[in-house]
Image (cartoon, rainbow, N blue to C red; front, side, top):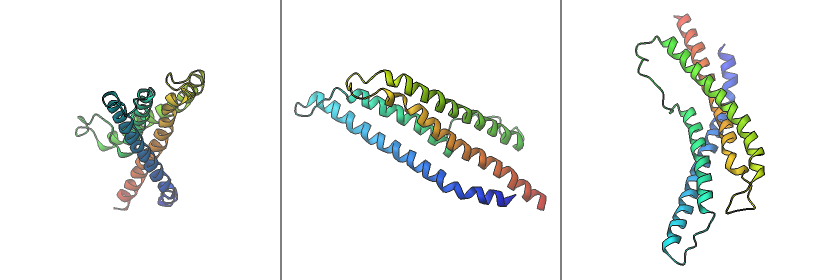
Length: 177
């Protein structure tokens, strides 16, 4: 059984790279958000700094991307809020089963976000444009949802795989004793 895990572990760098790309994108969006907000606020009080009409919509769009992508990042780090009050009273196997069930539900949510989010982005997004930027499609306003769904699915597959790997490798250790 360890040979299967060794083979599958060879794609771990792809998961790590996906995490790094999403994290970099979140950092970049935060920097853009701060710069545009600073320019917009300064433009209201300093006459020679422009206060573009598009700043609010771009900032809100960047925030939407950051919110859903950072939530996807939390999956990989196991940093989501979870209830652990009863963990000390439950058997270890029950906790592992509940973790896998929870991860499967989040995986299903990620798939729904991909499918339904893409449908919304394409259908609703193609029908409108930003008020302050008529040449930019509203697709970009709805696109964070399917994008985060993709990231969630990737990170959940990795998390569920790690649970399964932990179960099988620990069972083999117990069988050898």
